Image (cartoon, rainbow, N blue to C red; front, side):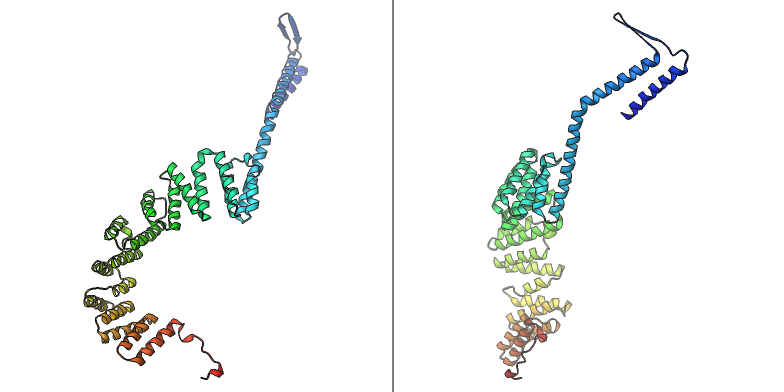
Length: 401
């Protein structure tokens, strides 16, 4: 507009200057349907310029209401954006009531009303108001029906956080009906199963999550460990189930200590002692585990002497392993080799004394009739159990020394 006005002004000034500088400033005759109009060229230029300005003015006048409306709308959207930012800041600082109010005030002027409603639902839940939370979620759905899955996922997440497990299950079922392979829906369903300890259903979900690659490997592995440990514990009386579970477990997790221990315990509970012994032995030959060697000494094997021979063969390679010495001592007790058992107990305590080892040695001494030695072993075990020699003594003079 400014550039156009400058051009017209330049033309007017040029025409006026020409009118005075030129002796013959030109002549214009216009004949239109019997009407004659006579004028000089500068006057014509001036008339055209005035006509142009008049037309521009009328056009601006015609557009003014719409432009004013657009300006007002932009102003409302700017203020709404500022309120949204302030609302998120308030929520981030823990002022949920203030944040909810800012996010929902003038929400129709927001460019992202769906996000406003979803954030307001979170703020309402943080204040403990489930009804208002659900109202905001309903308004979010009404605002954008195409975002039904996003709204349902938010609702399920909030229900899980609020321990509304049955409602969360119903919501997630709707999500997975709409989008069966939805990664977030499957993740939330897995979390729900963990909360409810629904291991069979989680067993079916984990392969889907693994295939989608949506979750970090560390988290998925931890869920596998939790699930398979629980399932193996429940399959103690079903040998076929134990084998099936093991085959469906990802290979990278088969040497995971907790899962391996759960499998061995399931086999032991099912009476498959030889199978359990074989697995422990092979696993120890691959990678030494204190937990497994202690479990090895607890096996109710038909011939404990065989276990003792294997334990003593490992002792030649690990003569100062306290857990292995304790296992050897226990196997000696079961084979009634009292002298070797005592020696192994004392060696284990010499390297790493423990209340349990002292207690078992005391029991052995009682069996051998050495009551003083047994009393000393029990006393040392109790001392370790209650904090060692640094435990303060009673010094009341009335009790004597």
